[in-house]
Amino acid sequence: MSKGQTTAQAASARPSGVPSGAGHAERDTRARVARLILEHGPVTASALGERVGLTPAAIRRHLDALLAEGMIEVRKARVPQTRRGRGRPAKWFAITDAGRSAFVHAYDDLATGALRFLADTAGDHAVAEFARRQIADLERRYRPVVQDAPPQQRVRTLAEALSGDGYAAAAAKAPQPGGGEQLCQHHCPVAHVAAEFPQLCEAETEAFSRLLGTPVQRLATIAHGDGICTTHVSPRSLREMDGAGEPAAGGAPGGDAGDPGAASPEQTQNSDEESGGTSL
Image 1 (cartoon, rainbow, N blue to C red):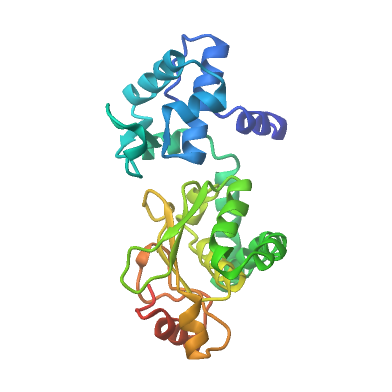
Image 2: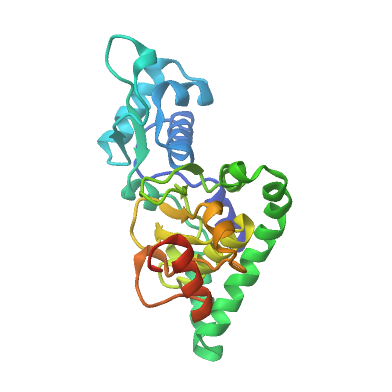
Protein backbone atom coordinates (compact mmCIF):
# COMPACT_ATOMS: atom_id res chain seq x y z
CA MET A 1 0.00 0.00 0.00
CA SER A 2 1.39 3.40 -0.97
CA LYS A 3 1.88 6.23 1.50
CA GLY A 4 -0.92 8.18 -0.18
CA GLN A 5 -3.31 5.27 0.20
CA THR A 6 -2.41 4.86 3.87
CA THR A 7 -2.94 8.55 4.54
CA ALA A 8 -6.30 8.47 2.80
CA GLN A 9 -7.28 5.45 4.85
CA ALA A 10 -6.41 7.22 8.08
CA ALA A 11 -8.25 10.37 7.06
CA SER A 12 -11.41 8.45 6.26
CA ALA A 13 -11.20 6.07 9.23
CA ARG A 14 -14.61 4.87 10.32
CA PRO A 15 -15.72 2.26 12.82
CA SER A 16 -16.45 -1.21 11.53
CA GLY A 17 -19.90 -0.98 13.09
CA VAL A 18 -21.15 1.20 10.24
CA PRO A 19 -23.17 -1.13 7.98
CA SER A 20 -21.62 -1.63 4.56
CA GLY A 21 -25.05 -1.56 2.95
CA ALA A 22 -25.80 1.97 4.13
CA GLY A 23 -25.32 4.87 1.75
CA HIS A 24 -22.11 6.85 1.79
CA ALA A 25 -23.77 9.78 3.54
CA GLU A 26 -25.27 7.50 6.18
CA ARG A 27 -21.91 5.79 6.81
CA ASP A 28 -20.04 9.07 7.02
CA THR A 29 -22.57 10.55 9.43
CA ARG A 30 -22.50 7.50 11.68
CA ALA A 31 -18.70 7.49 11.64
CA ARG A 32 -18.74 11.15 12.63
CA VAL A 33 -21.12 10.42 15.50
CA ALA A 34 -18.88 7.61 16.73
CA ARG A 35 -15.77 9.80 16.52
CA LEU A 36 -17.48 12.59 18.44
CA ILE A 37 -18.34 10.11 21.19
CA LEU A 38 -14.74 8.89 21.15
CA GLU A 39 -13.31 12.39 21.46
CA HIS A 40 -15.92 14.08 23.67
CA GLY A 41 -17.76 11.30 25.49
CA PRO A 42 -19.52 10.58 27.62
CA VAL A 43 -21.99 12.85 25.85
CA THR A 44 -25.78 13.09 25.54
CA ALA A 45 -27.83 12.49 22.41
CA SER A 46 -29.00 16.11 22.37
CA ALA A 47 -25.43 17.41 22.47
CA LEU A 48 -24.47 15.05 19.63
CA GLY A 49 -27.46 16.15 17.60
CA GLU A 50 -26.47 19.79 17.95
CA ARG A 51 -22.87 19.09 16.89
CA VAL A 52 -23.83 17.01 13.87
CA GLY A 53 -26.97 18.97 12.98
CA LEU A 54 -29.37 16.03 13.18
CA THR A 55 -32.92 15.76 14.42
CA PRO A 56 -33.54 13.78 17.65
CA ALA A 57 -35.00 10.91 15.60
CA ALA A 58 -31.98 10.80 13.29
CA ILE A 59 -29.40 10.86 16.08
CA ARG A 60 -31.28 8.12 17.92
CA ARG A 61 -31.18 5.95 14.81
CA HIS A 62 -27.39 6.24 14.62
CA LEU A 63 -26.97 5.70 18.35
CA ASP A 64 -29.18 2.59 18.29
CA ALA A 65 -27.10 1.14 15.46
CA LEU A 66 -23.81 1.84 17.25
CA LEU A 67 -25.19 0.33 20.48
CA ALA A 68 -26.28 -2.80 18.62
CA GLU A 69 -22.77 -3.19 17.18
CA GLY A 70 -21.15 -2.79 20.59
CA MET A 71 -19.35 0.35 19.48
CA ILE A 72 -20.78 2.51 22.27
CA GLU A 73 -22.42 2.01 25.66
CA VAL A 74 -24.79 3.92 27.94
CA ARG A 75 -23.35 5.47 31.08
CA LYS A 76 -25.07 6.86 34.16
CA ALA A 77 -25.54 10.61 34.30
CA ARG A 78 -22.43 12.41 35.50
CA VAL A 79 -24.33 15.32 37.11
CA PRO A 80 -27.55 15.58 39.14
CA GLN A 81 -30.63 15.85 36.98
CA THR A 82 -32.30 18.57 39.10
CA ARG A 83 -32.51 20.96 36.18
CA ARG A 84 -34.43 18.50 34.04
CA GLY A 85 -37.41 18.36 36.37
CA ARG A 86 -39.62 15.33 36.00
CA GLY A 87 -39.10 12.62 33.45
CA ARG A 88 -36.33 10.21 32.63
CA PRO A 89 -32.73 11.33 33.23
CA ALA A 90 -30.62 11.99 30.16
CA LYS A 91 -28.50 9.08 28.86
CA TRP A 92 -24.80 9.56 28.36
CA PHE A 93 -23.06 7.65 25.59
CA ALA A 94 -19.40 6.55 25.73
CA ILE A 95 -17.13 4.64 23.39
CA THR A 96 -16.36 0.99 24.21
CA ASP A 97 -13.02 -0.76 23.88
CA ALA A 98 -14.30 -2.39 20.71
CA GLY A 99 -15.35 0.98 19.36
CA ARG A 100 -12.00 2.54 20.10
CA SER A 101 -10.06 -0.27 18.47
CA ALA A 102 -12.29 -0.12 15.37
CA PHE A 103 -10.82 3.21 14.37
CA VAL A 104 -7.81 2.96 12.15
CA HIS A 105 -4.52 3.83 13.90
CA ALA A 106 -2.41 4.77 10.88
CA TYR A 107 1.27 3.83 10.92
CA ASP A 108 1.02 1.98 14.24
CA ASP A 109 2.81 -1.07 12.85
CA LEU A 110 5.50 1.09 11.28
CA ALA A 111 6.03 3.10 14.48
CA THR A 112 6.17 -0.03 16.63
CA GLY A 113 8.64 -1.66 14.28
CA ALA A 114 10.85 1.43 14.29
CA LEU A 115 10.90 1.57 18.09
CA ARG A 116 11.69 -2.14 18.30
CA PHE A 117 14.66 -1.56 16.01
CA LEU A 118 15.77 1.41 18.11
CA ALA A 119 15.51 -0.62 21.33
CA ASP A 120 17.43 -3.56 19.81
CA THR A 121 20.22 -1.44 18.36
CA ALA A 122 20.58 1.38 20.91
CA GLY A 123 18.84 0.17 24.05
CA ASP A 124 15.78 1.16 26.05
CA HIS A 125 17.35 4.46 27.08
CA ALA A 126 17.29 5.52 23.43
CA VAL A 127 13.55 4.81 23.27
CA ALA A 128 13.05 6.93 26.41
CA GLU A 129 15.03 9.80 24.87
CA PHE A 130 13.02 9.52 21.66
CA ALA A 131 9.80 9.71 23.68
CA ARG A 132 10.98 12.85 25.49
CA ARG A 133 11.86 14.52 22.20
CA GLN A 134 8.47 13.64 20.77
CA ILE A 135 6.67 15.22 23.72
CA ALA A 136 8.95 18.29 23.79
CA ASP A 137 7.05 20.08 21.01
CA LEU A 138 3.74 19.57 22.79
CA GLU A 139 5.27 20.89 26.02
CA ARG A 140 6.66 23.98 24.29
CA ARG A 141 3.29 24.79 22.76
CA TYR A 142 1.35 24.29 25.97
CA ARG A 143 3.71 26.06 28.37
CA PRO A 144 2.72 29.71 27.62
CA VAL A 145 -1.00 28.88 27.77
CA VAL A 146 -0.75 26.94 31.02
CA GLN A 147 1.56 29.40 32.75
CA ASP A 148 -0.64 32.37 31.83
CA ALA A 149 -3.62 30.74 33.56
CA PRO A 150 -4.28 31.28 37.29
CA PRO A 151 -2.74 28.45 39.36
CA GLN A 152 -6.16 27.05 40.29
CA GLN A 153 -7.14 26.87 36.60
CA ARG A 154 -4.00 25.30 35.16
CA VAL A 155 -5.16 21.69 35.14
CA ARG A 156 -8.34 22.69 33.34
CA THR A 157 -6.33 24.83 30.91
CA LEU A 158 -4.02 21.90 30.17
CA ALA A 159 -7.06 19.68 29.59
CA GLU A 160 -8.45 22.20 27.09
CA ALA A 161 -5.12 22.35 25.25
CA LEU A 162 -4.96 18.56 25.08
CA SER A 163 -8.54 18.42 23.78
CA GLY A 164 -7.54 20.80 21.01
CA ASP A 165 -5.05 18.15 19.90
CA GLY A 166 -7.63 15.37 19.97
CA TYR A 167 -6.99 13.87 23.41
CA ALA A 168 -10.57 14.54 24.61
CA ALA A 169 -9.30 15.60 28.03
CA ALA A 170 -11.15 16.89 31.08
CA ALA A 171 -10.24 18.08 34.58
CA ALA A 172 -12.07 17.26 37.81
CA LYS A 173 -11.57 17.26 41.55
CA ALA A 174 -9.80 14.12 42.74
CA PRO A 175 -11.95 11.73 44.78
CA GLN A 176 -9.02 10.81 47.05
CA PRO A 177 -9.00 12.19 50.60
CA GLY A 178 -5.72 14.06 49.99
CA GLY A 179 -7.33 16.46 47.55
CA GLY A 180 -5.81 17.56 44.29
CA GLU A 181 -7.25 17.14 40.81
CA GLN A 182 -7.50 14.51 38.10
CA LEU A 183 -6.61 14.99 34.46
CA CYS A 184 -8.53 12.49 32.31
CA GLN A 185 -7.81 11.76 28.63
CA HIS A 186 -10.51 9.80 26.82
CA HIS A 187 -8.46 9.31 23.67
CA CYS A 188 -4.81 8.46 23.04
CA PRO A 189 -3.55 8.57 19.44
CA VAL A 190 -0.53 6.37 20.26
CA ALA A 191 -2.19 3.88 22.62
CA HIS A 192 -1.34 0.83 20.51
CA VAL A 193 2.34 1.78 20.34
CA ALA A 194 2.49 2.82 24.00
CA ALA A 195 1.14 -0.60 25.01
CA GLU A 196 4.54 -2.01 24.06
CA PHE A 197 6.61 1.08 24.80
CA PRO A 198 5.41 2.71 28.04
CA GLN A 199 8.23 5.24 27.73
CA LEU A 200 5.77 7.30 25.66
CA CYS A 201 3.36 7.51 28.61
CA GLU A 202 6.19 8.19 31.04
CA ALA A 203 7.51 11.11 28.98
CA GLU A 204 4.02 12.60 28.80
CA THR A 205 3.59 12.26 32.58
CA GLU A 206 6.91 14.00 33.19
CA ALA A 207 5.82 16.85 30.90
CA PHE A 208 2.53 17.26 32.81
CA SER A 209 4.47 17.58 36.06
CA ARG A 210 6.74 20.28 34.65
CA LEU A 211 3.88 22.19 33.05
CA LEU A 212 1.78 22.19 36.22
CA GLY A 213 4.69 22.75 38.60
CA THR A 214 3.59 20.01 40.99
CA PRO A 215 4.05 16.23 41.33
CA VAL A 216 1.67 14.03 39.36
CA GLN A 217 0.92 10.31 39.39
CA ARG A 218 -0.37 8.32 36.45
CA LEU A 219 -3.19 6.14 37.80
CA ALA A 220 -4.42 4.51 34.59
CA THR A 221 -3.74 4.48 30.85
CA ILE A 222 -5.61 3.40 27.75
CA ALA A 223 -2.40 1.68 26.63
CA HIS A 224 -2.49 -0.42 29.79
CA GLY A 225 -6.06 -1.54 29.03
CA ASP A 226 -7.97 1.05 31.06
CA GLY A 227 -10.91 2.98 29.66
CA ILE A 228 -9.22 6.38 30.00
CA CYS A 229 -5.84 7.82 30.92
CA THR A 230 -6.10 9.24 34.44
CA THR A 231 -3.43 11.40 36.08
CA HIS A 232 -3.63 12.58 39.68
CA VAL A 233 -2.29 16.10 40.17
CA SER A 234 -1.10 16.86 43.70
CA PRO A 235 -2.35 20.10 45.30
CA ARG A 236 0.08 22.95 44.75
CA SER A 237 -0.32 23.87 48.40
CA LEU A 238 1.48 20.67 49.44
CA ARG A 239 4.50 21.55 47.34
CA GLU A 240 4.52 25.13 48.59
CA MET A 241 4.36 24.00 52.24
CA ASP A 242 7.11 21.43 51.77
CA GLY A 243 9.34 23.87 49.89
CA ALA A 244 10.42 21.08 47.57
CA GLY A 245 12.55 21.51 44.50
CA GLU A 246 11.63 20.47 40.99
CA PRO A 247 8.56 18.18 40.98
CA ALA A 248 8.95 14.64 39.75
CA ALA A 249 6.42 12.75 37.69
CA GLY A 250 4.66 9.75 39.17
CA GLY A 251 5.60 6.18 38.42
CA ALA A 252 4.93 3.86 35.57
CA PRO A 253 1.66 4.10 33.65
CA GLY A 254 -1.20 1.83 34.55
CA GLY A 255 -0.12 1.47 38.17
CA ASP A 256 2.82 -0.89 37.58
CA ALA A 257 5.10 -0.74 40.59
CA GLY A 258 8.87 -0.63 40.60
CA ASP A 259 9.42 1.33 37.37
CA PRO A 260 9.75 5.07 37.97
CA GLY A 261 10.51 5.70 34.31
CA ALA A 262 13.06 8.40 33.63
CA ALA A 263 12.82 10.01 37.07
CA SER A 264 15.77 9.52 39.38
CA PRO A 265 15.32 7.73 42.73
CA GLU A 266 15.68 11.06 44.53
CA GLN A 267 12.98 12.65 42.35
CA THR A 268 10.64 9.71 42.85
CA GLN A 269 11.09 9.84 46.61
CA ASN A 270 10.33 13.57 46.65
CA SER A 271 7.23 13.01 44.54
CA ASP A 272 5.96 10.34 46.93
CA GLU A 273 6.48 12.51 49.99
CA GLU A 274 4.74 15.50 48.43
CA SER A 275 1.77 13.59 47.08
CA GLY A 276 1.28 11.64 50.28
CA GLY A 277 1.45 8.27 48.55
CA THR A 278 3.67 5.75 46.89
CA SER A 279 4.80 6.22 43.31
CA LEU A 280 2.88 3.93 41.00
